[in-house]
Image (cartoon, rainbow, N blue to C red):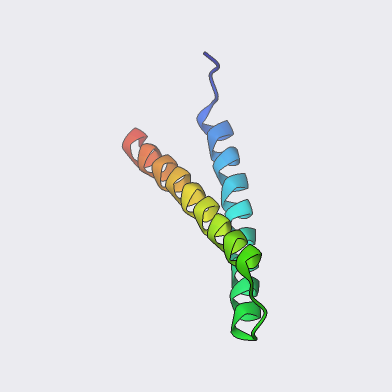
Length: 72
């Protein structure tokens, strides 16, 4: 089992948070495109996948923050 320091975990979570924020921006772009009439089955599937990834990242971030609070 590998051990990662708390500082290392925080850096990883920060990277995940940055990635999630980028995906949220991408999702907003997709929603704007859909509102302008650019849609199709592939685009809806991509938007759904983006949302799933964002939700997974949110869960990781929330868990890391909860663990950090418990460790303090």
